Structure formats: structure tokens, C-alpha cells
Image (cartoon, rainbow, N blue to C red; front, side, top):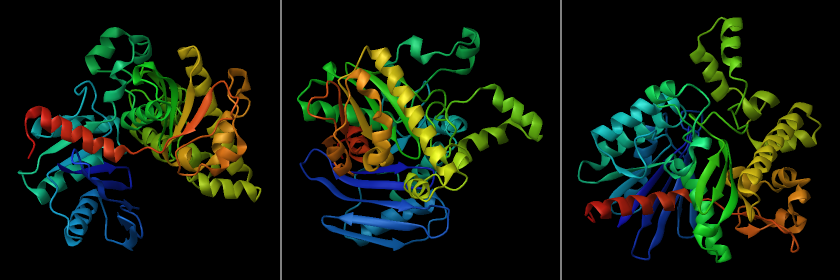
Length: 399
């Protein structure tokens, strides 16, 4: 089955056409960047050929149409199914779901809780339906599903139970497909049964999260009711004192919703540095003596390290720490800072291995290290395609 996997970020759209089940693997993949900004581009990779061109993409609806048109012009047959990554599935979905009106309605309802992501996913879903027609089935793959295994001590907030139940308030967790990908790949690399894994997985990109994994299952994770909780991120604050929202609303004379927008779009690395959310740019600025850039990076690494330490306590130790995501996979200096001073738990990095592991799958811990660290590039799109195919097969739709 040829499945087109669509992975929408706030200003990006990753895609991969995968031949699932026939040994064909990825047929083509690519990325639309800077959607809704100046100078959007389409990167299109097929076999050993990669091209990047400017393309009109004022929104995600236009971006998915660009992708479908480019696939057709390159001679690829229409996909037999389309799998969409959806960040927030709330309490409604414990696994992938075939997209129908009810599913779209729920995703729309949950957009308030994932404002940077559910909206773009909905736009891509609707545009895909218009372009491909009703004969091509579509499946939603939810980030929250992997974390449904969290025990109540980790998934509940210390608020009145009746309030939580009335409004569906709990810690849902996100980046589930990415964390699952790291767990499964680590198990394969080390010949460890998934059910025997005990890991701390780090998805570090513009959005960041950490997960404690025991027996292959999520038992705690840093993101919560929304993707705003937890680690400091590119433009998101991560966890702050809840009183800050009301305080700023009163002092600035604005609505609570506006403050929430600031915490999602104006904080994190961008807010502290005052210049950029991009770790590459901040590392360069730090070298030039930019103190705010240096502070932003120090705060970022410190908060990741704190979560690693707390999850080691939750797990009673771990076999490995796994780095994934754009920063985790490509920034050796950030990995070095995160792991600095962690000899107490038996983790020692190998400087040469760490430096050479850029976008590559590798163990970066030293030979005698009691705990290990790995870089495992995350391939969410292949997992989305495989999950979509399994979901349709379970329904008996192999067309």
C-alpha cells in the first residue's frame, strides 16, 4: 500500500510517500518550510536526487496542494491512503483513527489545547480530502496515544477531581510517535526486547519533550494538558508559575488568551535571547560574545538536564538516554552540556563520538560508561505511514 505521510508543524509540512508492506520503503520525501512567511521553499528528495525550489505556500492548505502537485508531476501515482500526524487527541483516541466527520470535529474541538499544531493539521486534512477525493482513505495518528499508559500519579494534576473530570483535564503528553520511534529503534540496535527497555527519551527541536520509558511504555512525560508544559522550547516558555498568566494579564491590561499566546509564540529561546529560536544561530551568537544568547542556551540545557535527573529517579536508573529531534540529532555541543556532570549516574560521553554524530544514528557514550547515550534520528513519517496502513488493514480496507 502506498501511503503518503503528512506531518504538519506550525510553519512546516514534512511528507513521505511510503510503500508499506511490499518492501519498497520510502519512495519520496520532502519538506515545505516557512509556510505563511516570506520565501517558502519545497525540498523534494527522490532516490539520490534532492532539489529545493521556492514555492507559494501562504498556508498549510496551499502547502499540501504543492506536495500533491509535485508528486504527480514527478510521475508518482496517487497515494492509496494518507496518514496525518495530529498532535492532540485528548481522551478520545488511544490509537490511530480513520478520518471522518466525527474525527475532524474532535480535532477541531481540541485545537484550543494545541494552537500551533491542530489547526495546521486540520487545514492539511481538508485540503487533502478536496484534492484526493473521498475514495482515498485518510488516517489520523495522534501524538497523545503513546502516553495513554502513564499511571494516574503522573497523568493527573493536583486539582479537584470533579473539575478534572468535567473538563477532561489531565496530562496527555505529546511527541508520542517520536518517542515511540526512539524506543523501538534503541531496542533493535541493542537487541533488547522492547518490553525490557528502561530509557529517558529526549525529543529536542523547536518543540521539546522528555519521556520516562519503562518496559517500552511511557510512565511520565514533560508535556501535559497542552504542549506548553515542560521543557523550555524554541518559542514556548515551558513550565512557569501558573500565577504568571493572571499577573501579566492584569498588569498588561490584556486578556488571558493573549498572555497564553505570548507563552506559546514569544518565549523560550526566542524570548530569552531576544533574537532567535534557532540553536544554530544562538551558538554562533554565543561565540561572538552575545550574553543573552549564552543565557538562553544555558537555561535550555539546564532544564533538559533537570528532567533527565528527575526521570532517572522515577525509573530507578536507566539503560540509556536517547537524543532525537532537530537539536538532539544535530547539536553535539548541546548534548555535551546536557550530559555534563552526570557521572554520578554512570553516564560519560565520548567526545569524539559525540562530535561526529550529526544527523547519524550512533552511541555517543564512552566505552566504559555504565549508562549510555545514543543519538537516534526520528522518522515519524514512516511510523505514521505504517500506523495508517495497519489501521486500514484492521478495518479490512487494503485498497
